[in-house]
Amino acid sequence: MVIEMKISKLTENIGAEVIDVNLKKEIDRGAKERLNQALTDNIVLVIRDQEFKPAEYLAAVSVFGEPMEQHFTQYQLKETPLVNYVSNRDAYNGGTKPVVRGAGWHTDHTNHERPPKCTSLYAVVLPDEGGDTGVANMRAGYAALPDDMKRRINKLQTLNVIEGSASPRPTSKLPKEGKGKHDRGILQPLVRTHLECGENALYFHPIKTEHIVGMSPEESQMLLQELLELAVKDEFIYRHKWRLGDMLIWDNRCALHQAYQDYDLSQERVLHRVILHGERPFGPSMPRVA
Ligand SMILES: [Fe+2]
Image (cartoon, rainbow, N blue to C red; front, side, top):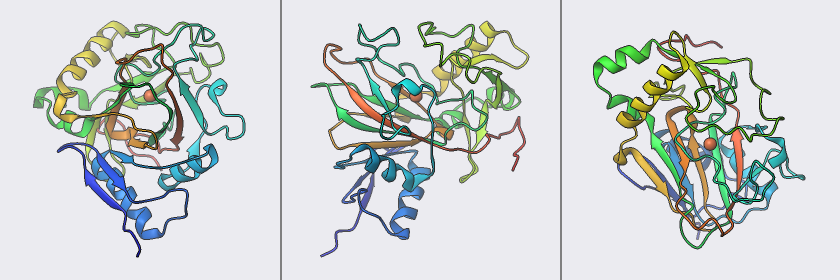
């Protein structure tokens, strides 16, 4: 008997769970299309019960696109450098104190001209409880904004660097190698149109925003905070509670994500991460280029 892959919604506004699929094996075109469509429709997928070695994980994420290199090469796995690890034991300052990387709502690598379209995580070592990952639907977040706010932000662009001068959470212990590597400043639309579904979404990374064009860094951060308060509503968030074997993947073009600092940091937490090549962002403030 062939068991069919099942995809079911996790919440009303965001997230779907995928069961009865083994991404260590080659899947057919139909299954691949269903998974990609489910990701576009639901923004984040939880694919359960996987058992990956790093190279198998990389191949599994490739079902959704082409993997790309990540910012910090010191977190690459030696044998499979397109897979990075995210560990609370590997602090920026040399690993003496546990850290939670990725706390605070953001989308990845906005200082790249072509930021990754998706980010995926795979659980390797989990604390007894917590260490959750949140993903927020920014299509819904944008749609819920008052009309005058939509009109105002539709015209705006952010200038993105590795770390903005008025960043709300300075990470000044970033290794030199990371700082400045992509630092010439990249413009992104504050409202981004999705390539596949055509819907607009809020699109920004508070730490990487140096400023919004026409505003000071401080005014820019105030507007971004206001947008976070208006748009990241509880009903738009999927908060993932990790189980071993979970592979999570979300669409960075229409989602913000964060790590929750909700667990005993004396316990180890290690995830593997892969990001996928994306297109040049476009939106009401920025025309689409080929
Ligand atoms: Fe992130």
